[in-house]
Length: 219
Image (cartoon, rainbow, N blue to C red):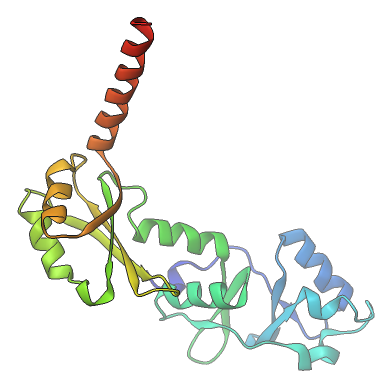
């Protein structure tokens, strides 16, 4: 998914002749803390709420252009470039510009979250298995073979390191709910299964509830 596909239908920008008061009011109306500034259609940068709070309300934005920050993405950028900006700089919106540096619109943070959820398969059926391992043991082709040996396939795979250790967490989503054989296979290959969610977990919960019920009856 590319940035031009996520542009909001609402135009959110101010021009150089807007006042500080106007700009702060727009931020309050839209519940965002940054606003793009344009000169005609050319993108100049973003102004943040924090940078305007101590500025006289009747001043024009042209008088505070030194406070603009130049964060933006191109229409042709993959959407994760915008995610990175939001994460690193705590942005509510990301301006999208074309090759001429003209503002095409903005991407809202909540729309990026939806795209990330879609990319991670959050709305798809299937089980989730979380493995822990040394970074040197990260081997996606092996993971794929182990899953396929149990008549399943990987639909999504993500990983991230623990910054304090050398341990890597690997999240594997598969196309079916029953996971007991797959978990047993990973364990035979000495992988640590940190967490799983699937039919086996559901069955374990049912068995636990049944055990509690039988214990209660026998009291």
